[in-house]
Length: 100
Image 1 (cartoon, helix red, strand yellow):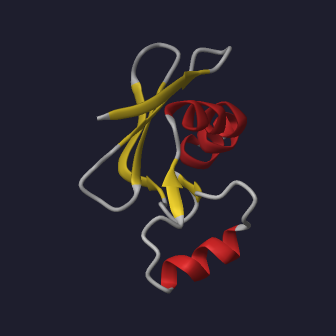
Image 2: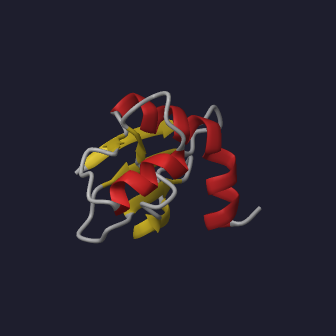
């Protein structure tokens, strides 16, 4: 299931999706429409997809609460948060997975 997509000004399309793995999948479609990269576990759920539920709490405090059994310490990103991340990190992801 697609979580969010972002298309760069140059026509690269990035798509994040849920997969059977703990991590998130990433697909990068080239400007000509061909598949440049596809992996069901490209984005680690330790770095993407979650934020502390309390907006005033830092990551370490939320991690401590989660380790103590608080299932509500973290909240999944919204589609908008995913789209903003893809926009912000598009070229880093393209270079990391496709090369320069």
